[in-house]
Image 1 (cartoon, rainbow, N blue to C red):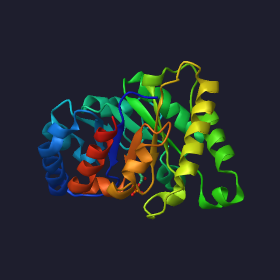
Image 2: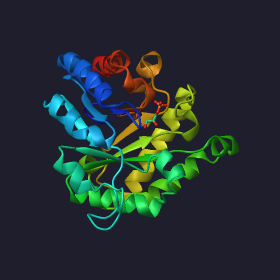
Image 3: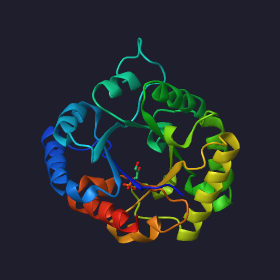
Length: 251
Ligand code: 13P
């Protein structure tokens, strides 16, 4: 099992500059209670510098929501892992289902993004997860296993990457899998990761999809859950801080 839980807040394409500053200020006020947990926020890339300047502490880390698979070049509108590192990021989310769907990202592209992130000293959070149809057909485990095998490079150590299991149908829907289903999936993810990367026995596997203060305690108690990737609830300083304290109480 991992030593500390990671609670990551993916703000997605929300908040104007004033809103991002307000949320960051509210979070920094509670950060003395974040000591037992690793915390990271993923603001829209335009606000990374402002948010980074405000957090300016070891208790909250900064991450990008995506990066390009190449280090630099003619890619209008894209952001590189190197640029994220330059503005103070430690993490980057890759392969989020919204990127897979809206930007047609393939596992092959995601693997390249993982490699370029590691090259730039960022820790990639690789998102995987099944659709509702796949869950209903009984192919959730095989879908996720396939995504992992195709998108995770081999020879990685536990600290070099993070996995986020986010069932597509649980994102922003208020629905979650049963706790048994989450546990079963996390244990299968761990098994698959170990076949790809035998040294990654302590890899963190986050759960994401409608995590709220109301369900956080039960989720964090599940075996092989190393934290949460939180969307909607990370836009409220109260809810996000509460999820962090629940994680701290578990540690
Ligand atoms: P919600 O917490 O809003 O369901 O979003 C989850 C997510 O997509 C985080 O990356």
